[in-house]
Image (cartoon, rainbow, N blue to C red; front, side, top):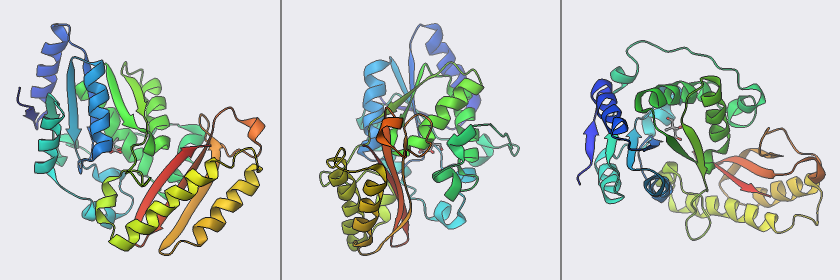
Amino acid sequence: MTMQIFEKILPIKDHISGLKKEGRTIGFVPTMGALHDGHISLIDKARKENDIVVSSIFINPIQFNDKSDFEKYPRTIEPDKEKLEKANCDILFAPSNEEMYPEPDNSEFEFGNLDKVMEGKFRPGHFKGVAIVVKKLLKIIEPHRAYFGEKDYQQLLIIKKLTNILNLPAQIIGCPIVRESDGLAMSSRNARLSKEERESAVKVSQVLLKTKQLKGKMSVEEMKMFVENEIKKIPLIKPEYLEIADSTTLFPVKNWHNSEDTMAFIAFYAGKIRLIDNMRF
Ligand code: PAF
């Protein structure tokens, strides 16, 4: 069956409510386009767990704290549609800015520590913009389940909290990072890396992988210093933050015994391109 494409809210809401009345379950994969295998893994999971798969492509202007990042964000709608069709996505929602924001939305949410650290600290306003658009999308699509990649792990925790705050019924499902064969976490921004920048970026993921094997041999502080020193040696890489934090609260972990599940989070520039990665330690 060919994928149905909707650009307007009312027709897609009507269509999905009809499907739900027939008893079909809806799985939703929101995206900003520039689709890669990481996104397709979310579609595949939604495909397995639901009768109908809906995806959205909307480059949400209010979540970009840096105007030039928004302007340079890859826009690849035609190949994206083909990839979604190939992955058996049933419905695509591709609204305009005017459709999503007929009026400015200034909603504020209280996420506690979750939006104060890491991406929240270095990208002011970013999570506010993400929360507003995800709230709108979940209210439009009203899925049974919505799928988000763990590469944006902090975003995933914030979206889980958002659905609790708003009592939205959608189950939020996190899916593992998909990596290139050399270890680089897939990201729409990878398309903008030069050959040299990409070579350097992959080394950051490799440092994290190598360090993970050393857990048990070092204290948290030693491990952090080890990663920082290894990363200093990589050309073209400027780290923005490196945190070793608890996977539920995102508070920094000082001692392995104080956290049941510890993760390393990093943001860095490869040349001018800002990337993030994380790994369970
Ligand atoms: O992760 C993304 O692609 C975006 O932040 C999302 C969740 C689609 C909201 O614009």
